Amino acid sequence: MSFREKSAWIAFVAYGVVFGGYFFTLWRGWDERYAQGLSVGLMVGAVVMLVIIATSLTIAAALLTPKAANAPADERERLIDLKAERIASYTLSVGVVCLIGALLMGWNGILVANLLLAAMVAAELIKAGWQIASFRGVVQ
Image (cartoon, rainbow, N blue to C red; front, side, top):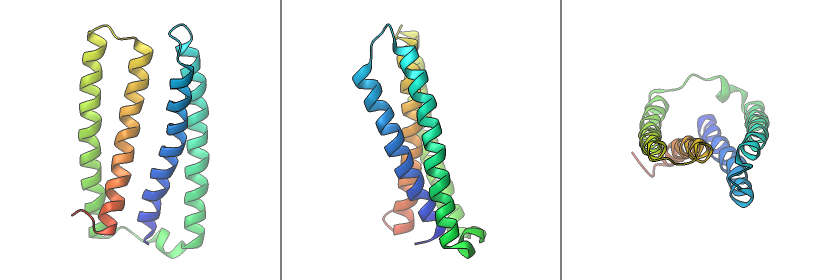
C-alpha cells in the first residue's frame, strides 16, 4: 500500500469517526433553543480531535515508511488526486446550492450551518473513498 493510499485511509477513517460522532451527538441532543451552543462546543471538540487523530496517524505512517512519505507524487497519483477532488467538488457544490435554497425558504440557520458542514464532510469522505478505490483499481 502506497503512502498516499495510507493517507486517504487516514482521512477517511478520521473524518468518519470524528464527524460521525459529532453528528450523532448533535442529532441526539438537538434542541432549537440550545442548538447554537451545542453546535459550537461540539465543533471545537471535533476539529481538535480531527487534527490530533489525522496528524498522529500521518506521522506514524511517515515514520514507518519515510522513503515513500518523502517521494514526489507520480503521474498516476496526481491523476487520482485530481479526479477525486473533482468529484468531491461536485458533491460540495450540490450541497451548498441546495442549502442556500433551504436558507431562502426560512430554515433554521444553525441547522443549515450544520448541514453545510455535513456537505463538506461528505465531500471529503467521497474524495478519500474515490482515492482508495482508484488505488485499489476499482475505478478508473
